[in-house]
Image 1 (tube, rainbow, N blue to C red):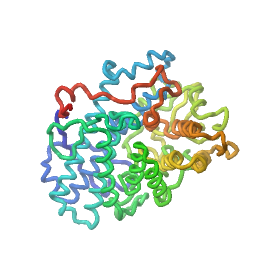
Image 2: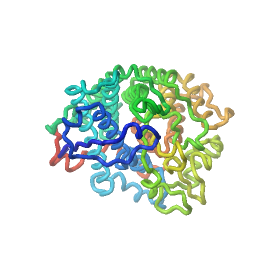
Image 3: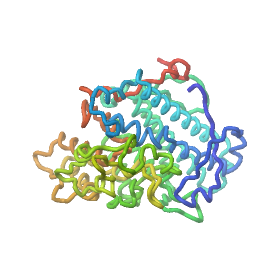
Length: 468
């Protein structure tokens, strides 16, 4: 990084948590760090500011959810271009200005947020006595460690190798100190060790987290925990990381824990709950989502530059000619708005009164998929069918375990489910990379060799990375 940017967000915490909308605040950079951490409210405000920053469109409010990562897997038809050569230009990360600039923006945003997390953690150690409420020091520190691990894991998934093939390949610099010293690129397996270390410490610190999914008028800082890195979000992230590195036993152990104990249930009706908030283990809220994202998601036909997909695309992804006609992830007025060969996902329209501005980052459904991938073939069909049935696919189309249901069949079923379930959420790219798919539906190149992002030019020339 060429610089470390501090931000501090001052909000009225009571009004902040009194509704699901996040207060639209601008970062402040003219506050002395030591003054900020002289009170408990200063620690709370800094933590909240990190979540607000994550919802920016340059990060999880766009590029890392519905925008850049989804365009890499060719989700949308809004450019009306059937020319594979043109669509493949997005993979020219070093010469294509749009991709090059987006990758640099993601890098800067991720490391700026990590810098602020490290600053918060440093001040918890140095001034944590100013957090007076019993249990809040562990709560804030646990969330911060979980958030640092969350960011580094996504950096690994973007800039790291296909882990199963090159676990010792260099990835990104790891920073756990609030400074600007040069740091060498860290091998992927060592970065995973750091990520797991943070997560296991976060899990311990959050063991007394009550995980109240609802709003708490009398104690707002402990309510609506789905918008925070809560205990079960940490456990789910641990499961996600273990699956990434191939430790299916531990991945399944944590996934079972989350499913059994988190208190969330699979959503069966997304007509009102458009982004599956009712099963979101960790997500963000974007204040004024409808206004901020109307250039991408504006449901007025005909669509122009908005992010829409064609009938053929939609029907293929959701298997409409076989099992998917009643799938709520597909149905008109549920998962999508159907038009004249133009169909728009409803997750980011900001339509509804209560559940309208949510960015899902980890959902309960993923825990079922992790189990389906990690257990025996016979058991896996039960987990896959559970989600398919919850989403409206009739039991007459249930997957059946028999001699024809092989490991390849399991992976094919999982691929189809990830493609449906996480539409416009950014997770399908990671699934394809984890399994090193050489091609996929609508892939515009003969072989997909573009799963690893290059270091930004400025980072190599001027930044804080020491190249080994």
